[in-house]
Amino acid sequence: ARTLELQNILDILPALTVYMEELNARSGRLERERDQYADLSLRDALTGIGNRRALETVLASDMPGTPLGLLMLDLDLFKSYNDIFGHQQGDIALKAVAGAMKNAMLRSSDMAFRYGGEEFTALLLNADRAAALTVARRVMDSVRSLGLPHPSSPTGIITVSIGVACRMPGEKLSIQELLTLADQALYRSKKSGRNTITMSSRRKKTERNTFRAGRGIVTLPISLDSLEKDREEYTQTAT
Picture 1 (cartoon, rainbow, N blue to C red):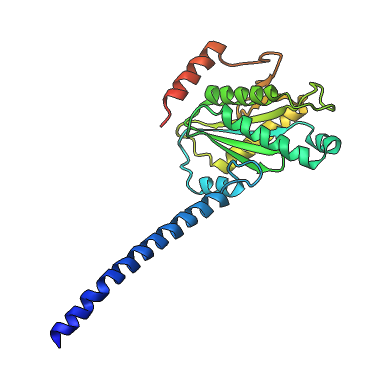
Picture 2: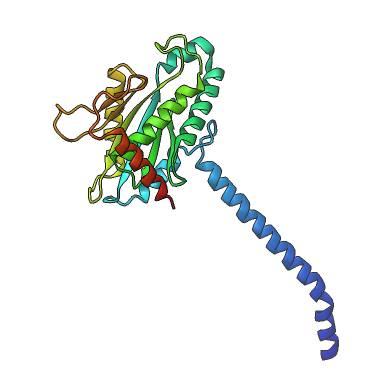
């Protein structure tokens, strides 16, 4: 009887092995599908870049005191663009701008998000003021180079306004506070005539930090050579 019991166990082992292999394969597929779903849940359905939820995930893991650059940008006169061309064409423009923004990032650790509507944000880890301004100018130039016609724009094409805020080493500002500062700088860019970059400054209000595309830099605390040097150093620190 004992021999028969052992033989029966041996007979079912091949089938049991196949079953376990199928179960492992099914479990692997479920894990991959779960990871894919999690990835999709953090991506904006229209543009493919990070969405508001992805940004909030980063907010939760932020470490105040570490250097960080933050850009807030908004498409200029986008409501009138939608009124002229329709929302479908507007969606195409948003996708193009998101792609241009992503391509303008200097390092793999730089993150782009759709903040909502026609507003986007970028997080630049370990970026100081010069590096953040360099990326902002690259984003602005990249969007302008798309050459998307916009009859209501003074430039004749779609442009963006950008607000920049930075957290220096040791500063305890949260990303949420940086978002507020960058949003205020973005508002000043809009008030300055759009198609403009404004650096947030918590220093004296008399100091100007506004830059306009196509007209060079209005007031810059550092030289263009310094910007280029910082860009190279910033790029080389990629992880």
